[in-house]
Image (cartoon, rainbow, N blue to C red; front, side, top):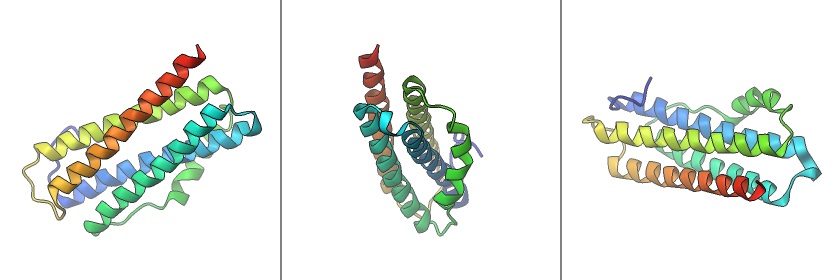
Length: 160
């Protein structure tokens, strides 16, 4: 399944939205894992960034879940995703690694939503949900991901 082609059906749209949910779940799990791995040694600015990223990802998941519910599609529980990323991030305890990882997460999510919006807009399919509402929600999430990229970049630059 690819976002490089127009979305052709509700089923395909639901699967793509589920990919977005997985991206958000991974971001949330990574933020929690980074916070736990560093603990009390975590800089307050980075701690706030991770907390915000986790809260924003949870909000994005809720918005995507609502769209998927409207399509009557099955969802993937967060509890199934978090353990998959936990082991990989136990070893990444330095601040630069945390910020770089967060930047990659934000950029990946931004690019995914950008591509998904383009695929929906290029589609001539009729969806089981309102296209304008769908694009509006995805555009808002994309903007928040872009803001996240800027926030991480500013924090990285301040540390140089």
